[in-house]
Length: 336
Ligand code: NDP
Image 1 (cartoon, rainbow, N blue to C red):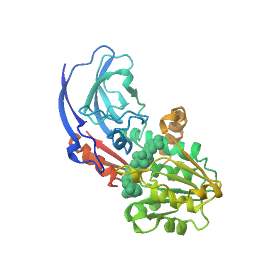
Image 2: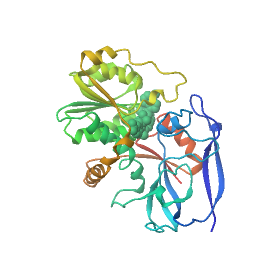
Image 3: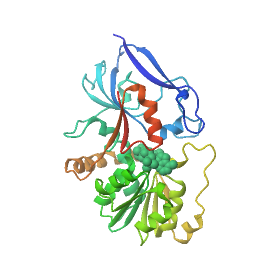
Image 4: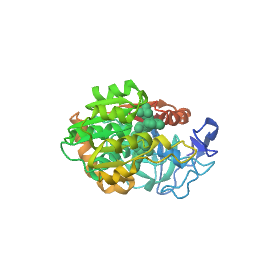
């Protein structure tokens, strides 16, 4: 039996901030599943900053760029509608990388069957229990090696990764957790709902001055989602032997020229700092431990999260642009 799907294609490689004309919503007939295949209807699509890189033409990136005039990919959760594959049955909740579309027919190997967890919405598998949550966990524990009693600074703190990183820092015994975000409302959310010790709106003035004010004795760990002036400020404020988990550098993702590097790299030497980048995909082996720990934190209400949900496949590009300009608090999703 055939069915219809709507899917977003990239039709031009954006220069600077992407525009609506770089994308096209295409409707097409899907064939019925063949042997070993399933038909899945997506319920939530993940919007992620890394997708901006895939819209470019960097053939040396870990993940190949999006092909023009082909459906874009990305995280999605959905339900199996029809199955001709062993191990997947209609109604099963699955995770895939076949996002930016309402439905897909593909081999069972493209989908991971998810264990429904009581009290946890399906969408959480794209956020707090998914790739962003694992990134926060890996960055803080494995990359930065957070120790009890340390002071932590998290940028992009009201986003999907940052909000989880700050809460894990608190649960792992940090003395103080400082967050930066792009509005007063987000800063307020960090202290009142996520348990950050202090937070500031980076648009209010110098990041360096605001971190110093919040952490007069300096910071020991910096979880970087932003790069640019945030990274430079953190290098200034880090204590000797401080560590930085370089997770993202979103302040430069739409840049048309290479952003300037931190001007204080000599301090990295003087203070014996460690700056270490990571890709969450290299740390899949930690997923079972992460899922166990995160599930129990969620059940015990020790970790909380928000989602920003745009409705309808037609709003996916809008949601992506909103993510890049800070319209989200917590994970940015599209409900289809
Ligand atoms: P978020 O949910 O944090 O959404 C992006 C946020 O970035 C926006 O809400 C906005 O918040 C902020 N932002 C946008 N432009 C700027 C800017 N110029 N300066 C400061 N902040 C800005 O996204 P994620 O949690 O999914 O990702 C966070 C970071 O982690 C990204 O850099 C991403 O690339 C990276 N990442 C890296 C992974 C890895 O394996 N290394 C895996 C997953 C994510 P605001 O209102 O505060 O400006």
